[in-house]
Amino acid sequence: MALILSYLLIFLLALVVRLIYLTSIIGDPMFATPIVDSAVYLGVAESLARGDGFPPGPLRFGPLYPMLLGAAFKLTGGGTIPLHFIQVLFTSLTAPLLALAGKHVFNKQAGLLTGVLAGIYWPMVYFDGEFLIEPALLPIVAGLLIVLLAADRRPSNKIYMGAGLLMGIIGIARPNLLLLAPVWAVRLLIGKRPIAALLLIVGATLPIVPVTVRNMTAGDDFVLISSTGGINFYIGNNENATGRDSTFPGLFQWTFEKVQKIAEHEAGRSLRDSEVSRHYFQKGLEFARQKPGAFAMVTARKVIQTFSSYEMPNVKDPGFQRERSWFLGLPFWPGFGILFPLAVLGVIRVRGRQRTTLLLFALTTALSIVLFFVNGRYRLPMVPVLLLLGGAGLATVLELLRSRGKGISKKIRLLATFLIALVLVNLNPLGRLDDRSQLYFNVGWAAQKQGESQAAIEEYNQVARGSRWYPPALNNKAILFRDSDRLKEARAALLEATEIDSTYFEGWATLGSVLYREQDFGGAVRAYKKAVDLWPFRATWFVNLGLARRNTGDWGGALAEYDRALAQDGEFVKAMLHKGEILIALQRYGEAVSLFEETLRIAPAGSPEAKTARAALRGLESLPGPDTTED
Image (cartoon, rainbow, N blue to C red; front, side, top):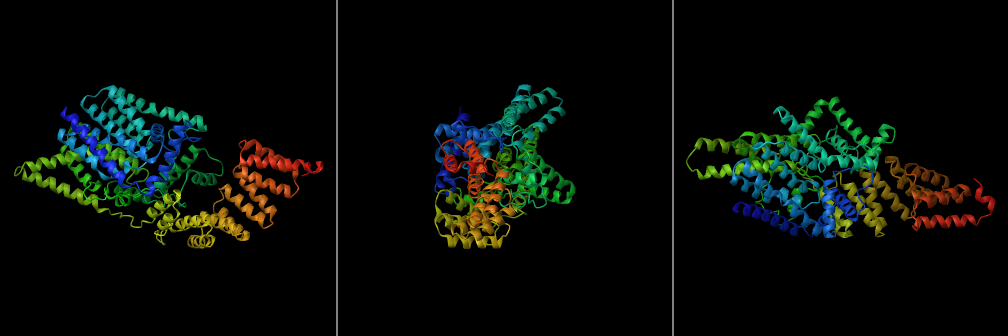
């Protein structure tokens, strides 16, 4: 009973710490308006709560977290505060679960220390406040560790099948972690337990099959879980890769649609989602084959980052966000820099199969990360193992302190080991990202999405001029200026952005929209032309270029731009309507009638586009009969 009470207190400790942290950041723009991945997951969760399901086509992310978030969304009715509360209720379970696992790793005291460490480990506290896959994954990882450690004590086929099932569940959240299943199966085969190995693989397969079937049904494409694995592999393994950021070569901010267009251009044909992933996986392998030295170097960088105290940012910087919280900014919260040395002590003290299990789990998880690219967020699933070892290490330290004068030589050896690990993990030879431009950009973007224009501009103004984020900051400021009719300021910002980076196609497109508003249609043509020459994959820009050409009197040129838009998207209703206007002006009435009838077939009934097409057809009917059929 006392032990159960201890686990409950550890859960409450973890929960209270997380709730206080959330209250400390509640006024942050990125709390009320999540960005990038968090915004995607929230959007999908809301769709699931409404009963609309996942986006069409194969999944581009593991489905488990959006499903969990969707259930929370349905339970609470939405809103970031209730969703955060439900999430930290769930993620706070990690601490008592690890306490339970830790009891079997070393002793009861080590288990309780593990739980306390998990409750106050600041990167976990931070990530538990983010709408991301990783924090919600940790209680399941802790559960898997409990099962694997139980199998060490009393191995059975049922336990290994349960372990496989948990591995499969983890895999449909983070597919790279599926590497655990074959590694454990090989371990069982080496231990001459083939039935257990088979059942583990069967268990891992069970959660994956419905996801694969859904992908085949929704997209007529064989995608095991998600279609971005090859893309992420290429991001971490290419000539320009640093191994620790998510920058796609040649793109400022990548999306699946953008990298798909590039892949299709390189392949010379349309590609399914699975083919896009395969295309980039092959490019990553080609880099490794053709430049083994560079590949070895970037891999070494990834290994160093995996075991560095620095929490490498991914979109948001945990260190930066920690500073923005009065609570998490307090200096006494333990981080990776103290956890890793404690874990090293734990490795020394833990014995038998438990040590093998924990080391194999940690190394397999690390490998699954290093294959792609490393940051604080992606290495989080490795932390529960380090917490278990760290709890054992901390228990060892307390034992040695209580032993007073006994075992001096042992104390010296352990102290030396601890200090060496402490120095190495905190060396950070790859350095920190001192330029906080992306962070200010992100805060500005969140404020912009909230409609807080002045606050957004103030954040964008803090982006350093030499940073690669400076032109996008100018672009976003220009959009705010444009939408508030401050066209002169918008134009000046965009001219500066495109002068700094003449390949910044989004800046050219925004400049085109500003010049169009100023009725400088010739300038708008030149700006939009530059945008589509640099990035000829956005149908909307061809329509805008067509509108600018039409206003210069170049009807033939406008018609050609609308055709280029429709070549990319054959059901782009606005392109069809604008093309129809030009056809009428050129007295090509028959083509116009066909086009407007096609528009009515595609546009939702009662939509403004459908009403415009119907009105145009009525106007064409009023023309003399022969003219309506002339080409």
